[in-house]
Image (cartoon, rainbow, N blue to C red; front, side, top):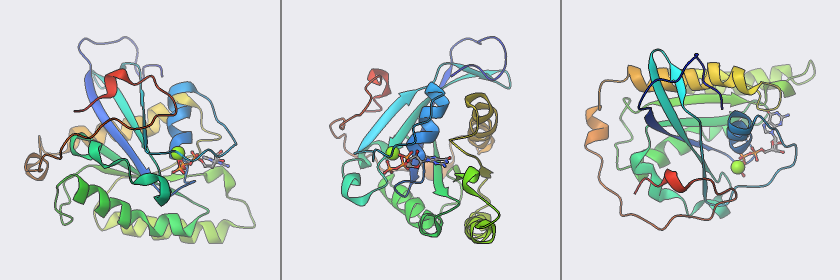
Length: 224
Ligand SMILES: Nc1nc2c(ncn2[C@@H]2O[C@H](COP(=O)(O)OP(=O)(O)OP(=O)(O)O)[C@@H](O)[C@H]2O)c(=O)[nH]1
Ligand SMILES: [Mg+2]
């Protein structure tokens, strides 16, 4: 990942960003596009959790390093992954604009995260970002269907004032995702009240052994 703005500043802040959403919504594809600038049309379900590090990103006079945590969307692979939730800074809730079920599941992912992180499900202060993926799949034939899905997600997001972004892991370039998605994530993180009280009061979850990883460049990703 290249920096969004020019030169690197000193001592990057580390931001732990977790991607949650239904299987096949495109979480892994978004992360891999961001980090590797690559897109794979084959579907390999994520098992447990994976993590990729971004390079230092200079944004609005600060330097950031992103730990991008990927999480299994398929229930049969998801049971391994709850131990990391406690130290997550921002959650991207991902759905596919062609998959109504994935939009309808946003609430489930939100609540599951808050519960695992030891936060109240009534909190509105935790920084979630809603990500609509696969916009390249919208055609003249399915446009109305996709719009219905998008509106479902948008109106759900509106009740919490969550920022919302549409993208295509397939067609968007790495640099455009850096500017749009990463910019939104950092903005969302920096705009929250400093160490919101809900987050501060989170119960500590017991450390759990690090999980199975498909790509293992994550020695520095340990949050325990
Ligand atoms: N057309 C299109 N296909 C996409 C896009 N993003 C992902 N896909 C495809 O959708 C399938 C699922 O993508 P993944 O990134 O593996 O989905 P995931 O959310 O990580 O799935 P799980 O790991 O099972 O939770 C793959 O075949 C991808 O190639 C996109 O923006 N456009
Ligand atoms: Mg995946």
